[in-house]
Image (cartoon, rainbow, N blue to C red; front, side):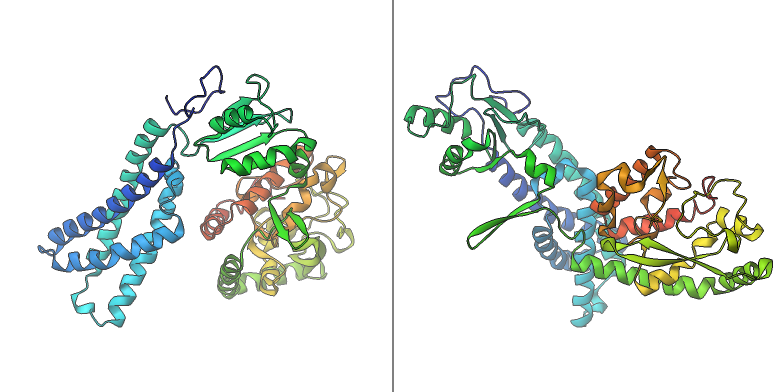
Length: 460
């Protein structure tokens, strides 16, 4: 039988397994990738050694050290997760990470072992670069082979429709209990045999049934030795992500920290380093702008406003004052417009160029904000005729991370006034995407791209 699981199970004999096991295929992929990676390292380094040094001794020694380290790091970092080959982009990032970490280890080992005289940085650099390209080519070929043999997924998933909500998962098998005269009756050996054969070689079985029938389906899932689960729309609405068993009760996890301790430390270090550099470089500009604002009307240089920050905690945000003192709107009851008559002459310029946002570097230094994150909104801001949190119930989820001076929404052009509810929806979607997919590289990309959108047609 072909293993492509894109259709419901129907009209098949159950005297033999309906689905082939993919466990052996996954194991073979892991072993093949590891062996090919080792071969790739040696081939790349020896070729580099022949071209650069006309001999292979140094290159061979470096490959001997690098290859076991790379395999070990790869095993622990998920490089050999079989499903990774179906996403060449994710595989590329994982390969790059493993190679960079392994190469760093080789350099440190050479330094502390005092073998730098027999160590070639050129061979290591070009050997790793060639290895990286070849590893991606190997994974692309392996992905084509895996799709031909196993189909679009390396895991068999069976969805049993037993009177519960309809469930749709790509590349899954679907079994309707009514069509096959199957029930949750554990007192009928024939019924158990029929269900057991449908479940054979399944990696994951999802049962969609009424709540009162779960007690009878659960023992059948356990006895089948599969990863079994029930469909629950109630838990889905709560946003449940995990079940934890404690003494005497089970708890449903509905929220988790978006970043682990290590990620939070890295993000904070990036903020402190870049903010310190920015304040040092931009201090003359900050001084000139402050003087110009004061000279125009003699009012205060800075504008302070309460904004909602991380954990839904209020803080005072700092900006250069761009409006006349008597017209400043601390509660943002009126949105700024393109030809706002409340702005001063210098105010119009610093708004168009986003210079008015630079004092928020002090907020970043204090820890109220981050360089990159969802932009903090004024409490009274409206999208159309509604307050922001009245437009979408998931609005508060954007405060799981510290607010930022710039963010994913800003580089996508979602800035300026929110005259329509859709204006807020676009920003919210970008903010939630950033929180769920945060990485150091994403922060760096956003910072670089921000430089190209500081002067924007929606900045006023």
